Image (cartoon, rainbow, N blue to C red; front, side, top):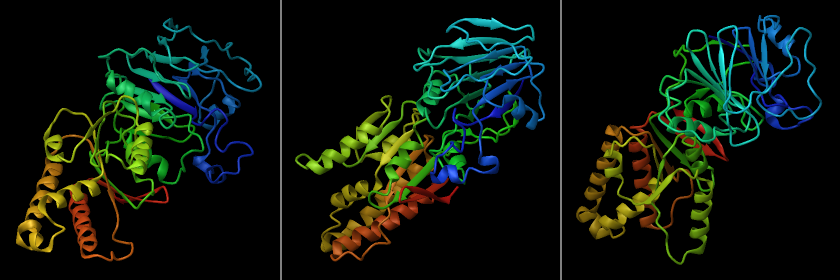
Length: 400
């Protein structure tokens, strides 16, 4: 089954008309995207958008062979003119299946937002799922057979991808293609990097893909370290890298700190951002979690507080205890942790502070902590496929 993406952008397109933002200003060439529309085998059109016939011609295709046009979401604004020769667009009621003379079967999938998803099975048995912007499947029950390709709003509804993974509808060989792309993410490096972290990819308008060809499915990074200064956005970046996966275990190393109102506010803000399907555990005992191969992705926030706890345990703040064995004990703890990272089979994202570029601490204990955190970050980074530095909310790839 062959899919041609006549458009891959949000309903308003990219750049948005009259939008002065930086992303729209630089959405030129392949970064410019028309409203999303899918042409299947030249006979089935999912979503009719303005200029569909011209978009097809630019892609080397024609709409003259289209026998069915299906709408997935309510279109705002003026009605789209139906090109001469195309059948009148319709919407299939949720749960109903449509059998086409071309051998395609289309089942309408219910969503948790206005609109309809479509599961398309080609004459050769290949299976594709298409979801409209802002929509996620409703009432998914697992286990399901994985689709060959899923085309959806990865950036706007990463939880939709997480639900599909939880139900088994997206597997390791499923080609996840992002569409409905808007002006929220810069196209220059940031877009492919963010999508790759979710196991997805984007392609330019006019691209033709073979459903069931797995060669271009991106590998999801297994171990990632996210570094950054205070309020740099490092925790948001770490959470973003796992929001398309179900049953994430969030490991908070800072505890509750009873009586500290400011800390309580920060903890509450972190909890508010996390998807409802994530679990949370408060502990600094990380090695058993890394050795547990239950498969759930792990997000550790953060290593800086883990180090504080470890230095407390070995008496690192006292010069005599430090010289009398505390330093060796801390080195052993760091080695045990990084060795567990090396051998873990879980998907792992860890957060840590980058403090080596700031002012020199005024106290000996402060300088010791700064030095040990630098050593910990270096050792941890050596075991990770991806290392990011977040500055002013922008993620810079140091490795991977």
